[in-house]
Image 1 (spheres, helix red, strand yellow):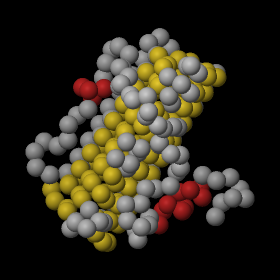
Image 2 (tube, helix red, strand yellow; image 1 turned 45 degrees about the vertical axis):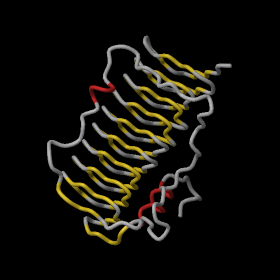
Image 3 (cartoon, helix red, strand yellow; image 1 turned 60 degrees about the vertical axis):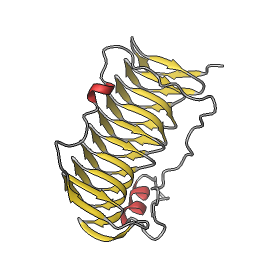
Image 4 (cartoon, helix red, strand yellow; image 1 turned 30 degrees about the horizontal axis):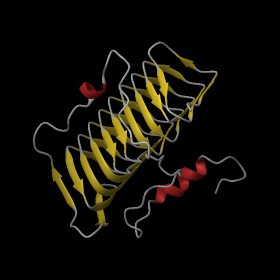
Length: 229
């Protein structure tokens, strides 16, 4: 049975809500499709939110969210966020974030982020896979299998050697054409057995020996007194 909760929200013409357990609170949705998702205090236009555990205090245009752990206090445009990825206090433009990637306080522009944890970093026209990136700035690079801090390689991640090379060609695909539409975006067909990703706001650790120094400070800043550390 469909269960939709709307509280002080303004879903305008062209927005549809489908599936069980939708919660929309204090939002402004224009020409969006929402299924099995929780959206709070957000503003989305021409977006698809499918099986999103939590999207709050964020804005998005022409972006597709599918099986997202959480999106918090972030801005999205012409992008795809999927596969249990999480985004906090970040700006994502014309990019793909997938495979349980985690972004915190970062700016991602025209990049493909795959199974990567990113903290206080700017990526412009980059491809990353199996990486930890902390306080870095990269442009036009391919990064794999490494932990970089302040643009310096600290150690490898996993059993493969780190890769850091300049990109060839014109860069990643622009996803605007795939998500931009003048009609309500289509909701992807999902199996009835599809489950919501587990909750939690911890960075996904690709290597248990690697930790990000900013992780603890970011979490403590979000806690009210007297819980700050």
